[in-house]
Image 1 (tube, each protein chain N blue to C red):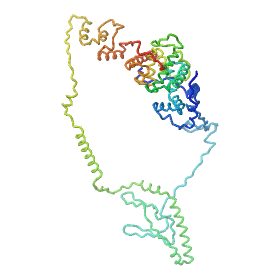
Image 2 (cartoon, one colour; image 1 turned 90 degrees about the vertical axis):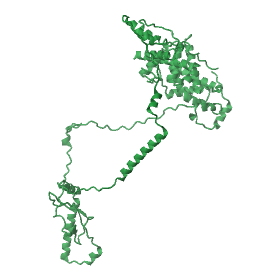
Image 3 (cartoon, rainbow over the protein chains, first blue to last red; image 1 turned 180 degrees about the horizontal axis):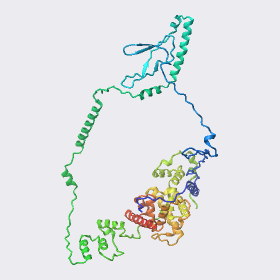
Image 4 (cartoon, chains in turn green, cyan; image 1 turned 135 degrees about the vertical axis):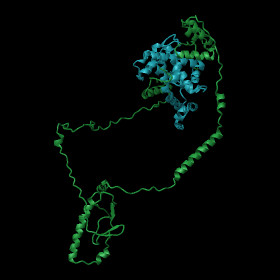
Amino acid sequence: MNLETKKIKSPFKPDAKYLSDLASRVQSKVGIDNKEIFKQDKSVKIPSKRKEALQLTVEFGFPLKSEKNQDLNTTEPKAEVQVEPIKAVSEDVLPPIAISSDQNETTITLPKYIEFPYSGIVLRKFDLPKQEAKIEVEEVIEVDTVEASTLDEIEYDSNELDLLHEQMEKSQMQATTAQELPVEKVQSEIKSSSVPTNISDSPSFSIPWASIFGVAASVVAVAAAWFVWNIIQKPVAIDDWADQNVVKTNKVQINVVPAANSTEKEKVEAFVAPSLDTDLGLVYDLVVEEDIPLHRNINFQELSEQGKVSSVELEKEGLLVLELEDDIFDEVVLEP
Amino acid sequence: MSLPKRSESSISMRNHAVSINFEKLDDGQLIQYFENPLHVEDVFRELLRRFQALIYTYTRNMLSSHDDADDATQNTFIKVWKGLPNFRGESKLRTWIYRIASNECINLLRKKKNNIDFDEALPELSDYLTDSPYMSSNDIEMKLQKAMCYLPYKQKLVFVLKYFEDLSYDEISELTQTSVGALKSSYHHAVKKLEIYLNVLR
């Protein structure tokens, strides 16, 4: 365990109540007014309102029995919703209308006396050919609104009025049916029909000014950066840089030629001993000597820098224990 | 224990004193207000607020016993109250208070044991580490406390001031009147011994 890297806290943690008590004792001892220094946590905890327990379990499959041992499928019948089928739109239900066809568009004109209840756009279904056909999904119906002034001027006899009334009722009923028809249903039906489109998309060519400006701005930015860099810091030639950073070392060559018939210990000694400083005699002892001396008096301050570093490293590795002098510092004396 | 009473005039004038938020002042600024009789008590209370928990923890680390730490902390602040008028500001306020607390710990140990040698460890202090109030039950923290009891008292002092109280070597040097080099060496050896002890206990 490394105490330097892993910080261990003190286990002693006085609480605010104790500290407040101690502070009041100190204040009374020194003879000053006793005031509360450490604010204690006096907040009252309000018990939270108990909530109903929620069932968090998930059951797979069909639950057959409830907690009360009742058959859920039989005791609580499911509410059945009957969905009426959507009436299809056909030409039959649409009101009789006058159609006048021009060259490009079809205009449907309603009789004057029919009050068309809608805004003007009606979806109509067409019988679509299966292959290669033009589809017009929507058709604009121009509704001639009836002005009050013109209505007053028209005169009707009783038969005409009956007929008119009949047609009005019929048209209203048909219009109501058309309103209930969901538009999406019709659209989806049209989309689902497999009709190949012969529309050729010819892309329109336009100059991408934004891209051009972006590229140009990037080039200018790089050029500016290069310019500034050259002004600020002139690049050093590689050779100069290398010359500055070379650490010159003095090689010490020790020519050691152990005798052919020397022992193992003598061979090791021959290699190690000439390369050791006198300060590193400890290492020598450890490497060469068979009997490692348990105690050796070293004056740490008289060692060279290298020797000091070496001995600290040895101590870190557990190979050496440096004992302290007893009298490190004088005893602490309280000022009078 | 008879303590010096502040003058009646200072007490009567307190009612007219301008309220100052002492919590925002640093130690040096706070001490300057101690010279003003109108603020003496408030300054002392602020010192208590700032240092009481620190000094309790420090003395507890040194003595292990809650009762001894309580006595040492109380005596420390009584001596701070008595010594503050003479505090010359040559050292930092924090260092000065820690110095008084260190002396209180030594005095308490001397009262408990005659002919105590502070170059030796005091392993009997580890007896206070069981069933003691205001102490967490963290295993590694307790092992370290136990290991600290086997350090020579002077090494323990340096270790506690550096490791737990985060005092700089200069501050500890000022407190113990010892060279920084000797303190570094002492701290280094204390850490090594504790690491060996903790590894053995693991």
